[in-house]
Length: 300
Image (cartoon, rainbow, N blue to C red; front, side, top):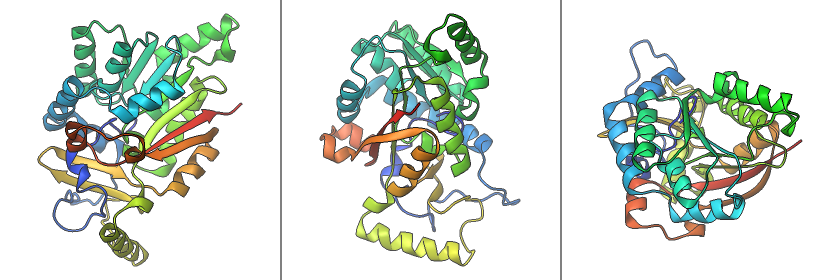
């Protein structure tokens, strides 16, 4: 989660978020019709329904097989200094500790989920540094600013703290506004050393089913006519409600992500759909939808 995110999306995204908002399931826009904001998304992820959902996943699921394969491939050094943005209830960060990674820092902007992450880490005796932060303002956080100053004073790493970064299951896409998502990418760039890998996931409109492609074409016509849901900021946005609460998600196409990486100082190195990497368990598939994994490298 981070600026406007959690690192997870509700299980209903498997059937709902890959299709444009129209009709049942869409969260009603407020009377003022203000655009979806980071504060609204943070409120959604502090909702007790979301907290329970993500906490259960953190305790029961751990890493997906696809996540484990790519982490072992691109983050092979277990002594590397890693930062997880949008850590949610700790599913990934605690699982990394259990794989032997020992220099872990994780943050989220949803206080209730962050408390659950700390609780899980305490239960598993995982010594992970957690802190509350908005991904768009990472370098201004005292924990980052102080550590960066100390590294710089010591002549190490050019002030860059981390050897790698993760922003797992669609967390980046739960930040409303492309400009804000790029801010988050730039902030991670600012705290990582040159050559550091960044791994994250997104949905992919290009890989939607034929039926969903028809719905996206209809949604595009609504945007062209100015008849889209007024709460949404950009084409590709969804905001819906189900039994797990309200969820914002931006669903990009592949070209959009490649442009965002280039614009924020990250060099694309790898991407693949989850289904191309591993056959996930039923529990993982029930919890989460198909997604595209991205790995990029911090440029100089």
